[in-house]
Image 1: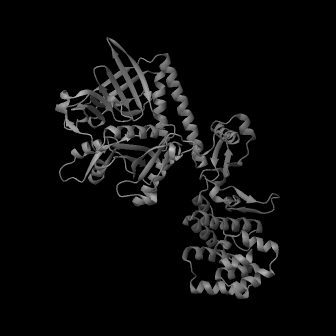
Image 2: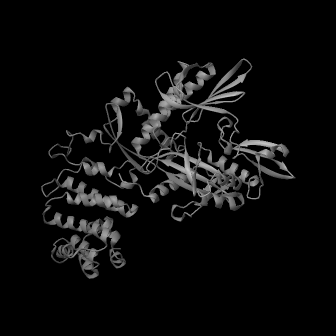
Image 3: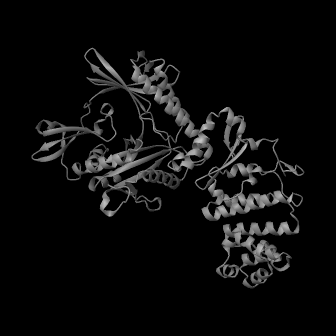
Length: 597
């Protein structure tokens, strides 16, 4: 696969950012993928009242920049290369929140969202870290926690009021002269994991609030750290980091688990914290594996370590009753998450898109979730083929041997070679026919719809010997592809329609004319003109066809008003309705439309 164009990556990143913004009614996005600037991509508006969003409720607006990232982060964790010009701009103005959307390598799935805060003071400190002629520098990123965007916006706004471009910056050796010294940490950063550029030390000097620059304090550290590999009793191995201070020891495992040991005299306490997001867009199996490994500690409370210096060790964990209950809840959460993501894969959409306050919708979703482990009654009563409408969208499933699958999944029931299509009386059966043509309607309202699966199954050659009922399904599918293109603008639908037409053989006089007219619709949409040879074939229909509907169709395509009017007058109500409901009417001129209406 070739390299993904930067504009596709950026569009996907902005779309995901705007989706997250849209989940909180107190926030409103002013970031437009079509209107991104050279340094800033737009603004986020923060309201005190998310219900009305009146001008009086607008508290502030923050500058943001959004980037997409499709590579793997290195062993140092999430980091991004920042241009000097960006940070210089932030330092001279009001700063910015910089977001990085981590995606898979073809920018189709979002893994995580990270950010870096650049108040004017933070931007100035970051610039000090640049080498003299360097135009970029790689800096650490912080992961955005679930539902943490509103809190981050507020923190950045408050920080910006005291860490603005007018705030004096002093060296560390002046700290002894300051009054009212305070220490805080960057938003979302654990004190036990804070790097020097994530620690905010401020104080009063000569009546002014100043910021202490820790960037040159190479030995300044609140803790000592050591990397390790953590092995769980069930065999799962994850990267870990020990962090040790005078009163606390933490073990951070992966990017979601923290074991916190509070040292008290000769003893201490253990707290297990985790921050597994409710919505996982990356490798769900890997994340659930981590959850279950942690949850299993309630049965075997021991961990094994192999540090980077080669030393090995074992740790027995003092997990009490409340700790075991907490781990039990984590296991249930993991199973629930696994079930939800299983259904989302089948539906082709996130469950977040559904209205959970609609009782009818909730009942349908819960019914589908229950089929993750179906009961005996469900196994006996649920048919092999299901269609379900949820919030105006249609979903198609197969259900056999206790497995619910998307109708369009390659391993579904209807992909098997022994399946045949036929009439209810069994008199006409077609082997190798495309069963997907049975799915009729607005394909844009079928989130599962898989064009490639439909085309891969289109091996049966349609011709004049094909039963009329199947030819009609086939033709309606072709026209539905064209309709989908008209509403979405996606070329894949025209490609599918053209592929279906190419699979048609000799359809007889009437069928061949209809096939030519449908192909003409596609050509006109793609090229806006006909080649001479094709135009001659189409003109034969206009001048020689004995079918009034075909003459009207050809006249419409050539915009021959007189010929269209003549054919239209000869047609009955049903024929006129058929043309009005066909996608061909969408490319008619206004004069033709006036006659048709």
